[in-house]
Image (cartoon, rainbow, N blue to C red; front, side, top):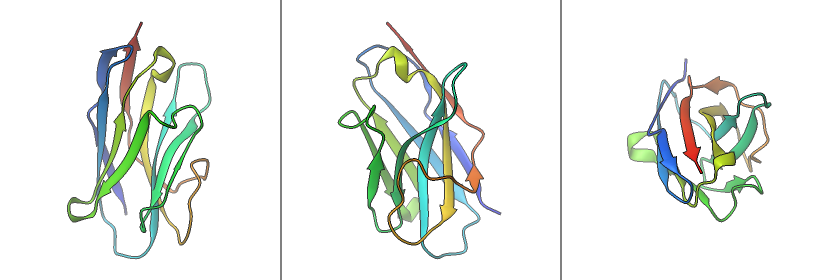
Length: 123
């Protein structure tokens, strides 16, 4: 069973930055897709960014140029660097993953989910 634990959330002012991290455990090897999703109050969950085991990335248009997804394979850790944050980025952010071979678009469904972490951006 894959276990995902997020960290790094919090509150910042508009224009600020945050870095989210997600530690993954329980993998038994093979190709995968990992990503970040978010759900704002009263809205549906949406994909933010994904990265596959080869390092190919995909971003939602709303975060392109501001967010960067990366992975530290040695530490089984996924990161999301968020810059130029806006109030509309306020949401619960979830780390997710699935076994996958090939390109993994940001809007793909996932099989494993973390519990989420809150990000609040004030204007």
